[in-house]
Length: 631
Image (cartoon, rainbow, N blue to C red; front, side, top):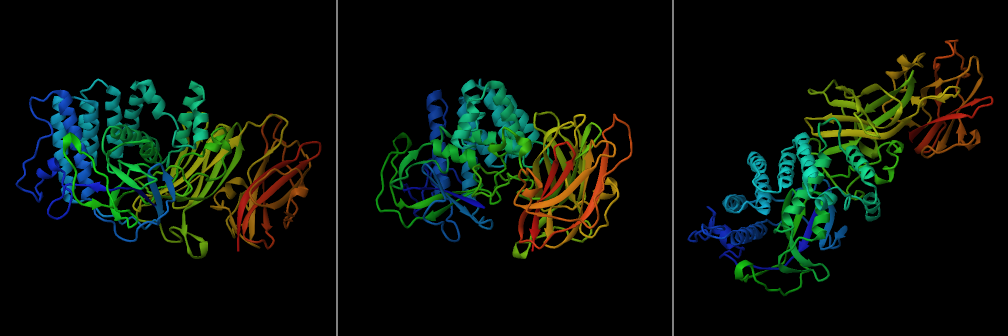
């Protein structure tokens, strides 16, 4: 998806003989300047006092952004529709298709003008070691792909506000995709910054809807810190990669926002949205800040003609008394975001109980997402076909996760990425992670199979699981996340594992070890298909009789009070008999069972399989498995 991010603006500009706007200082210093006879007016000269030098370099920065705008090419293709998909203050936002990322590249003279501005910023910083100049210097060095120099400047610092140097270092490292180091620098900045800045940067304002952001801000200090850490940890797009690029990108957005509160930026003209008129001058306001923090940084710019612009223009003075005069320009400046941007943040409605989140509930398309991000290592992240289940092993929890990456096929179906082909030249990276909800190190297992089954043991508790597959050559990934809860089994109680579906056509297994390698990667079954399922029961008494019922209901899992709540009962081919040998009173006794089922002819859609155990004098035990029935 593409974000069109636009102000409607009218500018009165100085023009060259070709009718193009010409910022006086910057253009004169360019090798390609059409007015070759001009000499560059330096932004900072020897003998200036610091206040005047700071003012001059700020004016030069304004002129550069005006020049960037004047040399931004017109976009190709159709213009966005007249109405906005979303409007934030003065900003009109349109969502485009995934293939609509064909915006023009930056012209060479803009890069040369930026290099000239960087030289002037270096000169100014020698005279005035000021926070604003340092921020602009790092910003434009990064924009010019001079990452090493940006990091050197941030490291050498030279200002009293050391926290700002840490933040700039974090920004530069993040843009270089060094996410672990970037997070370290940002955390140093958070530890050292003033309280008011810390509150601003650690709020979830803009990221969450206003009511939920206010609820977060009302939390006590310790509670707020816990929720903040949990929120960003679970918002990490892929745990397979070191560092949390969604977290560092969020803080990098705040660095940019702070930089441009006192500066001109490409979209930063003051606009009266109701009149669709731009007044000369620059102004960073809350609408720009919200758009930046929610949607991230632009990856490019274009302009489009706006035929709805009414004739007429507003005049005004440019910096230091220079007048803008010339042709009226009714073109719209448009900012473009990464076309693969998606919503990755953890759903706020599950913040109180992350371990209860249903399977994959937080990769959302741009229209559904309040805030966007595109991981550069794998911009395209799709949902992963999985089946995850819990079992007991003494005092531990055993988690089984089967997976298979798929791609959309015709008719709304999905097909395996690699199919029956041999392993790709570079096998994908795969992993199963268990992230403790209350904090602490995660547990994981790694592999290189295109599809397969993972098993992993952990202490009983509350977790969020993440099954992930990454295809590095194609820069694409798949993931599935869901909550997992398993409490220790108390003496005298009975519990049952999750119900697991086997691959089609495999013989019924006699043991867990036989069954686990054939767990179906996903929960799709065909109407009328015969398939095997298996489960384990724990805590039965010696020779205790159990009545087993397998049923199904329409929709996702819900609470069932009795067998009569089932939409239907599935009769297996053979009687289900549960008995076990006497292993001793102090051991948790596990009984494995598998049966073959045949679904009736059901309409395609979501259903739930239920397994219910009825024991004399005890509360029935039910386990459920959501399935998708296909035609």
